[in-house]
Image 1: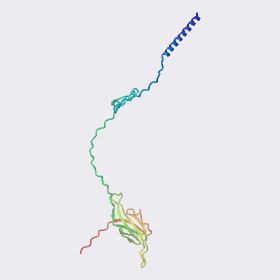
Image 2: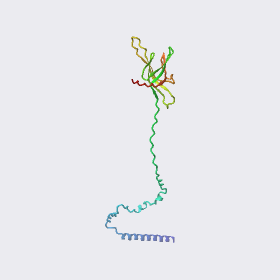
Image 3: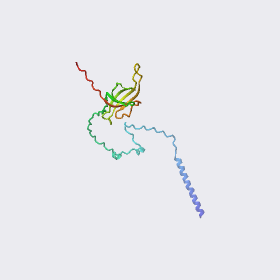
Image 4: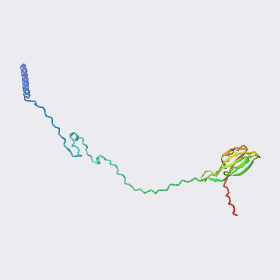
Length: 221
């Protein structure tokens, strides 16, 4: 019985394969291949659009189109409006301040000097007009300037620029020997030891400055 059942199942499978093969043969008989190749399609000319109009987006481009957002949403913090302009009053122009002129030093025409002979201990006070040489024994004093401190200076001071030459007196019948300079510089009345005359026989220092007396005009006849 089992062997008979197996034979029936095999016969049924063979009959199914026969039916399937017959169906495929009918489909192949009905198919007819094309006799001529397909003609190429002519390109389609683009539709003209008015100037300034953008082309219509395609299906892929529609998804990439920007979304229009209202200005309030695009910029939630708008810039603050500028403050209203205020009117400024014109500033009156002031004249530049004039520079303060420094006080001038007092200048005089005569220097009063005092000299000391160290050998004889003799002292002598004499006047030396500015620019005029004055002899004291073998020394010749020439004053170039004599002045006092200005009112805006810290300490009042009297000073004179003095040039001292030594020249022995001429002997009778002989020419005077040439002189030589022994001192040149400023002498100060308040501090005579600041810049003293260095000489083995004589000392000299400044006492004061004074103005020459005005010369009276000659009397009319």
